[in-house]
Structure formats: C-alpha cells, structure tokens
Amino acid sequence: MPEIARVPVAVPVRHLYRIPEAMVLLSMGRSAIYEQIRAGRLKTVKQGTSRLVPAAAINAYVELLMRESGVEFDQAS
Image (cartoon, rainbow, N blue to C red; front, side):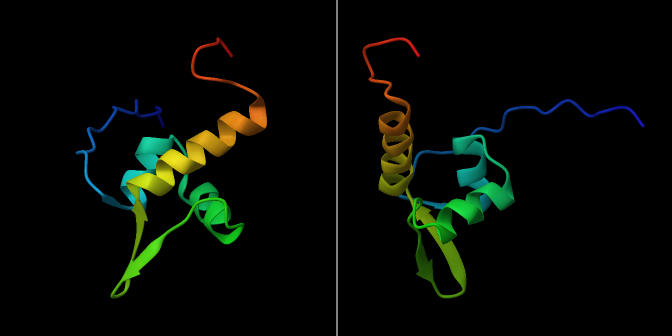
C-alpha cells in the first residue's frame, strides 16, 4: 500500500485548541501529546468533556523545550 503524503493543515489562531489542533501546531502525535500532559509539561483545561490546550500553554511548552535544549531565539540550533 503506498504511503499517503501528509499535507500541512492550517490551524486558525485562537486562545484554546483541541488536541488534534495542538498535535498539528506542535508536530507531535496523539500519544506524545497525552504523555506530555500526564507529565505536567503541557497544561490543559477542561470545558465540559472537552480537553483544550491554551495557546499560552503551547508557547510555554515550546519555551520549555528550548530551555532544555539550550537554544535561544537569536541563535541557530
């Protein structure tokens, strides 16, 4: 069976993202996202039965990854 090419999906800018949208924004799979949530590294909120990832939490997670890798915005990785 041929592999299907993945086409980037545009995610609108907003304050809260559903898990599939966070997966696209962070370029991570579903299980990796939930692993980071369980570890407390990616914060989420619940609205009813939906688990949502605040935009601020996505930014904080990216900053955490950059700190851990020692990368700053003005330098190459």
